[in-house]
Image 1 (cartoon, rainbow, N blue to C red):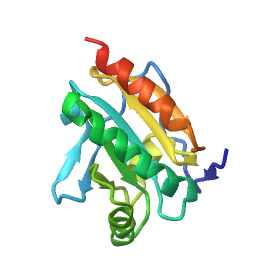
Image 2: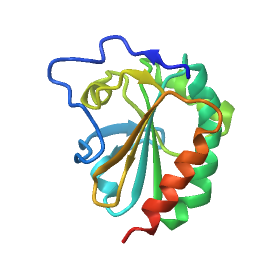
Image 3: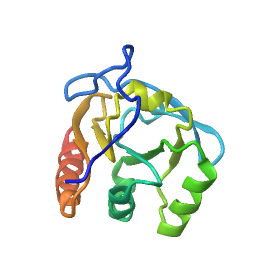
Image 4: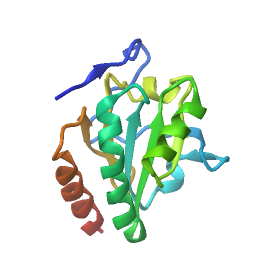
Length: 159
């Protein structure tokens, strides 16, 4: 598994995001223009995927995530792609090139990345309808999308 360290990610005031804790709320500028806030998705199953343009595994994973998003969006699933690059234009170009349709959020100051203690790229956080973190995945290797599918389906079945 290829996981690249994120420089400066572990700060003294960072929160370790792990299963069983409430997902820290945040608001970031989105590719659609307005800011999006995580708490606006309460009641939906949310996948937060931290990624960067320089991350090869992220490029491999994004089309697979987009397939999951397209398949389950109508069932109450949301996917937020949080890009950590300083240049949001570059991130948008890559997403367009890959045909990504899920919302992109731009964490160009890496404040949300610090809040979530992102230490590897990509990092994927699954959040249930109540806003609780259910799992955290670091890195990507082919086949992980099946695990994501299983988790999304299980969380969507929960009332």
